[in-house]
Amino acid sequence: MVVLAVILVALACAVSAQTTSKIVLTNDDGWAVAQIRAQNDALKSAGYNVVLSCPAINKSGTGSSTTNATTLTSPCEFNTCPTGSPPTGFNASDTQLNYVNAFPVDAARFGIQTLAPKFFGSKPDFVVSGPNVGNNLGSTVLISGTVGAASEAALEGIPSAAFSAATGGQVSYTTLTTSPAAADSRAALIYSALTVRFLDVLLASPAPILPTGISLNVNYPSTTNCASASAFKFVLTRINSNSGATDVQTCGTTHLATESSVITKAGCFATVSVFNARTKSDVDAATQAAVLTKLSSILSCSN
Figure 1 (cartoon, rainbow, N blue to C red):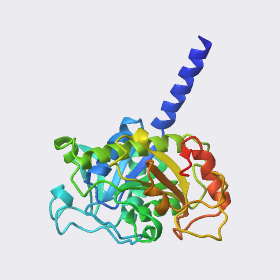
Figure 2 (cartoon, rainbow, N blue to C red):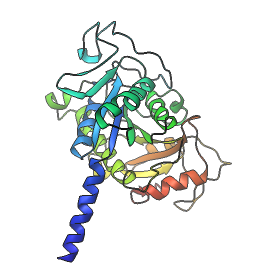
Figure 3 (spheres, rainbow, N blue to C red):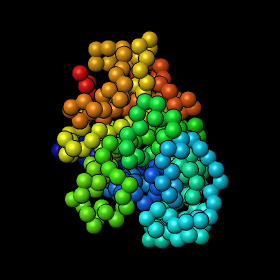
Figure 4 (tube, helix red, strand yellow):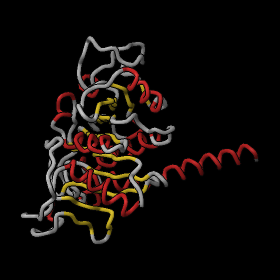
């Protein structure tokens, strides 16, 4: 009975930790793509308190660009709001689904500064950017709106991660119900489950969740040969190749493989790189070590 009580208390604490975790969810593909809505649903189902704040239309490849939100001169993507709609808006049946007619950075900022206080009564605990439709590897992080939004969060003092995925397309969230067996729908569901798995571990770690000004770049490989979330393994990597750098010691080496070299390996490896939110470049070994410690229970070696 004592053992059972301990287990129940541990489970209750885990559920409580998730329930009190307040997440701003953003992206650069737009507020109505299948992958972001699948991620929203998965986070909510896992017990997280989520508010979605994404660009009104696809803003891929806009990096850390920023502007003032403006009235829509054309419909939101997939005609989810009409021409002439206000600069910011929401879904009538779920007011925690919000668009911002500006860049990903602006959507993340609106979520942190306006929506989080409104819905949470406080700042968010974490910002999830993505999963993006398509990987963001190597120098691509410099132009990625997904990475730009995660960087903005970290620079505002909110821990964050950018998630990007190899499989999927720019399809409406409605395909999740109208075509649930389609490759895009299956991929969206697999990737969203992976992100929840990742966050469950990271957000259960002691504060601070991440070092100040630091974010994570997470990339998921193709689902072609990885048909379920359980098939994937997370690997600590670096964004850019640097033979002169000394990284954290793991998997028998002090030279982390690049995310580009790992993502295509057989074995369903998802990459996790630690980067400086201001420069979008790799960090030192000590900072990598802090993340390694937090994620050690789900990290594997790719060699």
